[in-house]
Length: 409
Image (cartoon, rainbow, N blue to C red; front, side, top):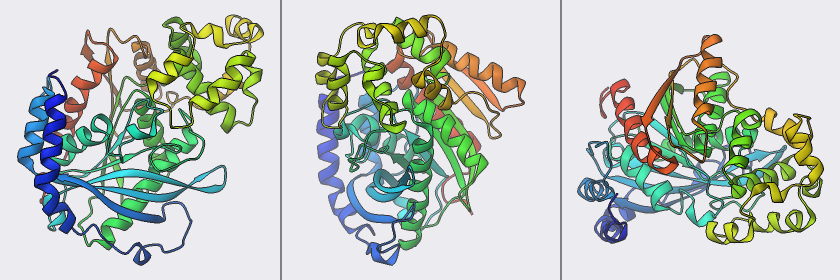
């Protein structure tokens, strides 16, 4: 991987070169023509262009990113931040996400399909896809938008322009916020008179691997009208949260993952964090996950060993496999015990110390017994981040083999 310094310069240069295009693109639309004051799930609040890059700049970005698996770039793309309404516990909450549209689609040619990209663990809202953050927004937009796909990337509730409580690895909110972004994006595309593809391709890394399985399960059970899931790629996903993911995080000293998860579930299940954590961390942890703390500050405020977070009686329950509200919530939010209909590939790295490779192997074995269309894809002897670096472009090439070229009637 090359240094990102020149990549940042290329992004700046691309913004200047592309400014004339994306400020004149059909992005300044009157959202009152779409949903007005409607607060139903999927209703659009606003659409804002946030950048654009031509194919030459995208090729330069991906070249400098030094992807180990090369992907062709056929087109430039324009990025929009879409703010929309979704539902959390029966109440409307604001959410946001990135929508990247290939130039050719803005000019009326059909896209290859719609890729929904689900980002990895990032509690800092400045690193949300619609910011647009380089790693979680711009690079997926370049990889997929540059390949002729419309890209949608939800920020998740509590991130991006949302200031609600964060819903880390909370399956119901993950599914609804993603579904509602798809509904909102289709309304935006209709208002812009863009051709729309029914074909959905899902891809996600880490937290987004879990989200990919959750979203595929939800969209196969209740499709958005006019769409169908064609394929999904879950990379380094945490699927069996109670049986594999949490114990692995505890063993490998990932206090941030553990505290983020506990804080999220305490909020969503209306449980006091003090019933899990010792008093000092029960008070401190919720403040760390307000969306305004960078990862380095969060790590500095947490113990090295996640066992130090928990009350002794909770640790005893974990050791003896006795249930408490937290372990019950982990089971409620599992993503492995079901049978996908569209092909789902599980990419994993053998040296991943953040998410166990066993999470993917277990999911595939259980799903296969249920008739699920799941395939394991070992990426190689790589750690967590390097696995994504290999697997995201691999997923793009797989999607290419399943989709029609852009513009095909």
